[in-house]
Amino acid sequence: MPKLLRLDKEAEIGEISKDQLAFLVEQLEEEHDEDRDYYIDKATLELLADNGCDPELLALLEKAIGDDDEMDIAWE
Image (cartoon, rainbow, N blue to C red):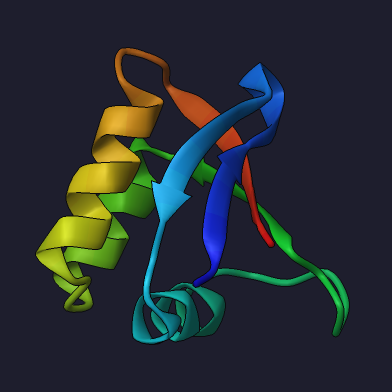
């Protein structure tokens, strides 16, 4: 299973399904074809929710960002 990591705090966010990963990759901007890291802020979370993000994935990301305004994540 793919795993999400929070790069700016060097912490594991958790495992996600292949479908959840496909949704993230589709929704978030990639700088190049092999890009696996993304910048997420509160507005990004709202956009993901508006676009039909899986509730479990959204909860995982909301917990990871916590009280911070932004975070950098990656998947492996």
